[in-house]
Image (cartoon, rainbow, N blue to C red; front, side, top):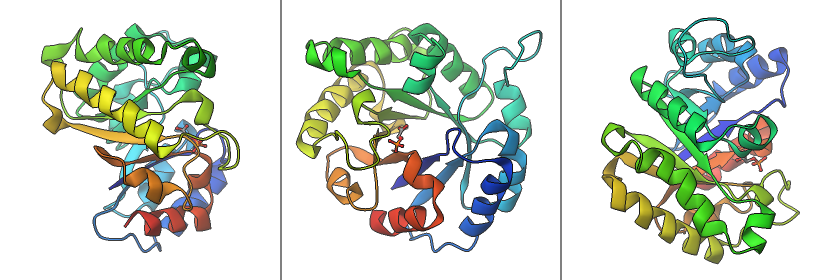
Length: 245
Ligand code: PGA
């Protein structure tokens, strides 16, 4: 089982390094793979504090290698500090930074080119769900890479994260496991029409905590979870890792 810890913009530099040092003392159950995605300013220091067996991830990366791109960090740059996994197309990037499916696909291709494993996030908004557009939105998000670049696909993660279920702190609106089962079935079927499913790891993300992770892990096809808020607290993260075993 995978646990992708997306620390978003929650932790300061010192807090990030401190948590990485705590993780070095964690009891990570056998069969559970933790991947940590800190903010860019803390990447190198967090990576050097983490034990070897913990995956080194990043929250985003730009597809161009070098040049006049103020504020951007390229996939090549991530690779040179030791990054192994990179999140692409998170709904917060899609909505707040206006990233479209085409840009997300370019990021995936660049991640593969630099020998990293992309973690593609897909998911519909509340409005898209309410107007019955979930299926078409997910198909478009998946199609931009799995259909348009069918022959370039390598190992990757696909994390289904309904936008309306993210950052609810485990108390607000959440995705019922039986609804997740239906969505996962569709997603796996579509991806399977385009590519070899052996190389795709399916995840769920959206207010996952140690209390609800078990119910999600029963859902067919799921190999793990992508966790935001709950992965930024030492005790909550340890509890999640234990619950995943
Ligand atoms: P959350 O974030 O766990 O804080 O809801 C999940 C995500 O962004 O996928």
